[in-house]
Image 1 (cartoon, one colour):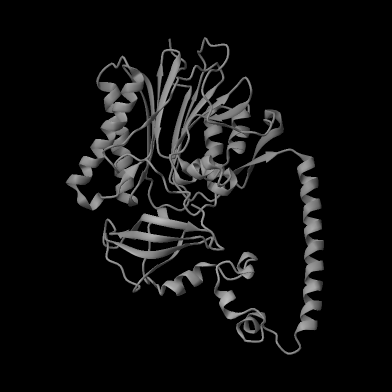
Image 2 (spheres, one colour; image 1 turned 180 degrees about the vertical axis):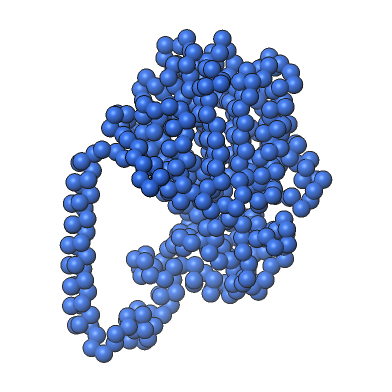
Length: 446
């Protein structure tokens, strides 16, 4: 038996987004002798390498399931991903200029009344359970920030702005000894459930709660997908956006059975309270909630009152402490300040903790590092603000001791490698070999 009608119950789409010059994502859906197959990949390694890696992965996985029938589906998923991994590594060995290319991968195959799945990297698989109107994650990212979340070091919200949020721990095409993650048990979905495979171009822009709201709407499947793409682009569209939706319509299961790796904790919003309005040809998600609006108004008024009070206090304090000096920063730099000079340099200085000078400045000065000038990095590393080495220079492909400063003023100290661009005029790549991570105040965070 089939769980759905592949011709009308499946929606696949990919969008370049608003920032990237090329689409490095790739996806495909097709019938095979083993069942209906969905594959979703997010390439990396530059415009050329990323697109090539994701295409090789999709083609290889599809080929593996199309060529023959497999009696052991979990093992077949493992073998298909390993096959794709070796194909990418083989392409790199034949074309050394593609070194560093790789891709994430999500795979789902519909076998009779079950869905088996596997993944590598931070592309995700979700299921929207129609009976409870809740969205569940079925995969857990193979990423640095997911590890920190699991350790309790950061929250899901903090992960969104973490300097290493784009660093993944597993990918196809990087190492030959890859171990894919295969589902421990298959999904047994009920009618009305919706399976989604997607890249982080969607989940990095639209959080799970909003995705759940969209799934809960009583609109056609393709409109749900279009609304997700629209919202991801309205949030910035900084990455390529790819998603695959499969609506279960022919299941015999009365209830959904699956292993959840994460659930939206808020109460689901009833579909009738969510509308998509067209404004200047853009679709905007509107949640009709008067209480939220009233709370927001109160917060804004209170904030304005506090701000005005703070301004009055600051003016009074400055009038008492300073007669002629109109520049606080100049006064801080002179000997008139009671704080000892060596205390100002300390990463633990209270002024740093209150939003003053970031700790990395003194780290760089103490180590006598010099800034590497006139270097640009690929879009994958757009969170890097500056890099410092012993002499302000580097040799492409060779590691060096240095400090990397991120745009949120967190920084890392260790050994790093700046890789050659694929083409002469393209930006460089970057790889940490060993690092100790610090927050803005100079406290270790790993």
